[in-house]
Length: 272
Image (cartoon, rainbow, N blue to C red; front, side):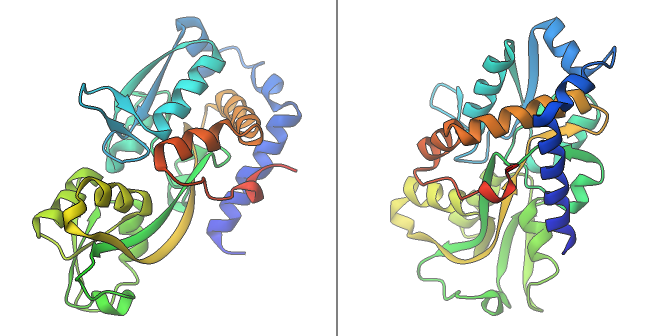
């Protein structure tokens, strides 16, 4: 079993324990973030609002997207108000570790590297990492990236996935967020981008004259809610909440409403 699958299965076992009663056990701790959230009646959630369809802003600068919907549901079920703090791919972990946010719901792909410093909930969402470009660009596989400029978000999942596997001669150009990465493709600064399939679809829809399309898939990776290692009670509550809302279909509905496509099957990650 590779380290990625091992980390996911470890999370599943933790979730199962949560469903069976870990919530009560963890809440015996006298001081924890879950108690603090309930006492202040507000949860601070870090969301990437430059990563459609997971997080975006409308013409009135109001946040929306599948992650925003999930965050609203979570806060409502916890019985508290929600405050959004905006993050980008590279600063999701630092904002969590420096207590600027209680949790992170930001198309946060579960990776072994990140799992070393934070905990992830049971997967509540997922994205397919792809390479996207204009239809006229002759790209069908990794080999075709040789000699091409490919944009990625610095330190993000696609950067991690593509860096060790792109062919010699590929130039990876790193940007700070998904919006800038997509803009680089539209302006011709790069020949292609490594990003989530959902972002390619959104970019194509907003720019119909550019004929942006997915060229090939790199990997499908589940998303988890990020929580600090010491916040065991909070993680237990979130795991139980995710399992409930995956089984009743609420999270799948919010994803499909934002993405315009069904949520990838995550049943293998749920406790039996």
